[in-house]
Length: 109
Length: 113
Image (cartoon, rainbow over all chains, first blue to last red; front, side):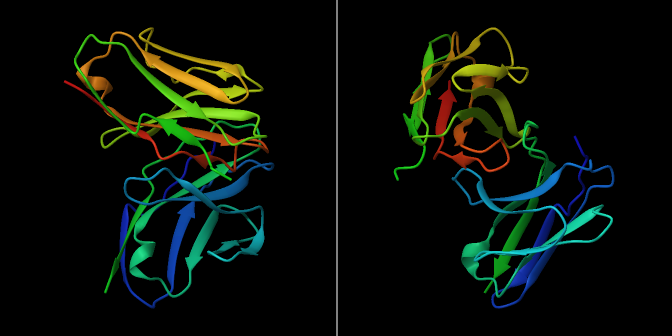
């Protein structure tokens, strides 16, 4: 399982774009990069997954460079409701998920 | 779709008592996961079932914990006897395609006094 490093916490303001970068230097060839979001008092929620280049959905974009040693989750025009913990998880279909500490994102008005 | 259903949502019990947590996964999902979350240890995987069979129980802390999945629509996590250090939020999750896209339930907040 790839070891990940992501910021412990980040602050941003409403309306800004937020980018959370995760490093995973020893990612395996068949690992995908998955991001989860956890709101206070709720279970984590799958938000996006990618293998390389760029993936976009209605919630976020995920940028993965060619060497795949890092990935960046991009949240466009955040609001107060985006305050949550964001987890970066490199893994393949059959891995067990190991959630690290994640990044605690705090959106300010 | 009702999502993953867990019961009870809150449980307060005394040390030494048996506690049973219940989970109904999303219909059609063939994998089920039990997690425990505390401030100190974060979110930990306890056990993982695939097609009702336990695949990985290496996260189960000790013999006081047991989990069963008698059919595709129901699972239990039992703690006997419970201890104050078992106080945590216990999440159940299910997935239909591998392990990467899991759907979590609302959790059961367990307090052992």
